[in-house]
Length: 165
Image (cartoon, rainbow, N blue to C red):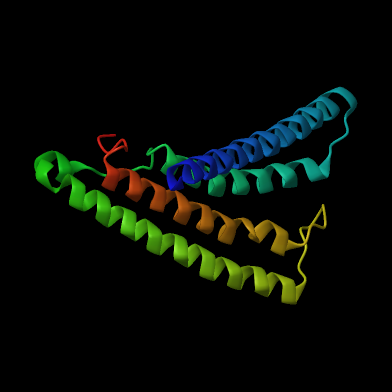
């Protein structure tokens, strides 16, 4: 039963990640396309379009980190593993533990930054979006990275992961 629950949880997280990335990237693409058409066709620009694209780049980067962990496609230097193949499991576990520490830092400092933005009540220049909304992606991605890293560790322990990638 716990296997089914974790599988459903994994599928739910995957859908949230994929649909969120799809929606925000499509919104940025449509606004950027409209801005280009308006700029060159009607000599009019949408000032908010570039700010939206900037926010989407930030969000897609942080969410993409969680997706990269799930797909085991994080950038890594594996020269030591190629020289000493026997160290692969230990180094993989070590990097996963470091990733858990990094995700905890993202959550902690991300909440601190969000709190600071709420206290100072700062907003984006053009769209007037409260900056704490923009900064919430930092602790959210920290939680997602933590969950995905724990899933990868469990897969590695069970031997069902893609540890050779």
